[in-house]
Length: 399
Image (cartoon, rainbow, N blue to C red; front, side, top):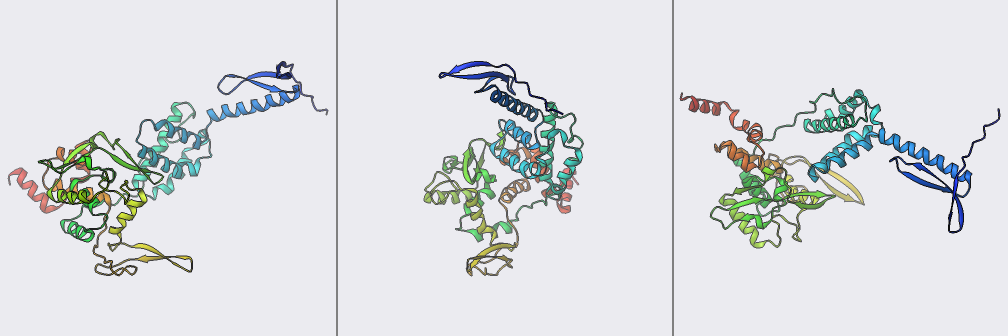
């Protein structure tokens, strides 16, 4: 059977720089008319066919994006309304737990089973991560449904609860606070730790704190929380955009912290209370090194590396209290408890509640948006012990 000869349309011509070209117009994916040129009708015909294929593909991809393409578009749309640190967390989580496993699938071919399988490995991690991934999945697919990119929403029936419950952090006891402060006296994390324990600032608030917000000569000395810190590719960024509007607050500080900050200010060469040797705010890796001064003095397992003949050797270390480090004989394990930066703030808020500070005042000092958050998270540490419950009940009921 003879192959059908392709019919080439009659094209118009134009003259450019004394040369005649054949020309026609087609509508692109946005509906705009664009001109295509060729030196011969046959060349122009092939260019038109290729352009039509590209236009059809662009229209198809616009109406049928892959999960990766739509997730990236969703992130761009959300970037106008959320904090940079939140966006960065969304982006990191989305790429690792959504785009990596199903990013190449088209949105309209994803099934509920695909999403349930995606959540299986996430369910073995923390409940907070599971809830975040679940929220991102639902947000992306509800947005696609609203924009009529998918005919049904496979995320609609996903279980909202899952993951391993996070072990609740306990506040440090007075004895643990004393041991901690004695251990790190004159070491890099000391000032950071004092601010966390006695002003209750978040990590990002402490690392952004500048001396213009530390009022030590007032009748009531206080710290004004006005800035926040985050890192972008390990470079510190200081912003006046705080976690919530309630985070902007003035916190009276006790004498022990006043004395600590006065001593620090006298030797400071920086606008920042916590700074590197050049007076600049800390990068993420720099803060990790600072906090290591605490971590290596606990009996928690940790690692260090040595190099033998160019080979990197990993060593596991777990000391008992009173033991000296194998790597540094002058370093002694003094703490049989773990400490995290957030635990300092946790201890501050817990101590306020133990001291019977009213919930609205604790809410303000903690920088929470409402007192329910404060009491839901922290009040149980005071009221879950029988002997304390007995006294509370007796006082309340006059028994």
